[in-house]
Image 1 (cartoon, helix red, strand yellow):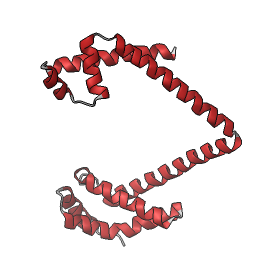
Image 2 (cartoon, one colour):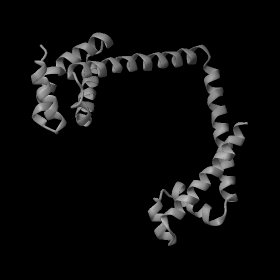
Image 3 (cartoon, one colour):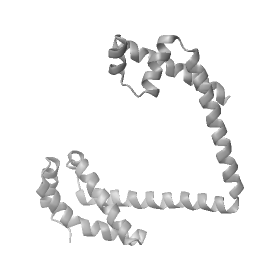
Image 4 (cartoon, one colour):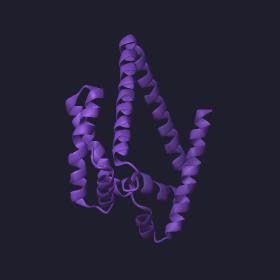
Length: 185
């Protein structure tokens, strides 16, 4: 079922160099085993297939780091174990949330209203703080955060140094953090 350790090591080394054939060999050898392992814990074949594909996608993306592991098989099963733990943790959180909604549906609604009011109040404070900024800092901050321009684009448009743009944004964010810290007290 499993591959000889030396042969596995050779394929993993080639995988680290981006060898597609080595990946295919490792995938073909370990995919069914990892899928069965996952399906045994989560009892959902389709989800086990998706999770196994996610594992092998991560293996390919991180192939250079994977090439340095001592045991590819152990690495795969550690990834699978972590996915199972994440799955159960996510389900536990979801179940708690659903139970809370069933037990006290009004509370969830009032919490959302409170969060929306807090967000609006905070947004208003931030807008006021931006209005109080010196003209150049305000202009740069608005171009960066509201218009989505990069620091280089702002520097080019205003014919100033990129570092000047960065300094203004840093100072603007510092000012806004003070406002947010004040709001929390």
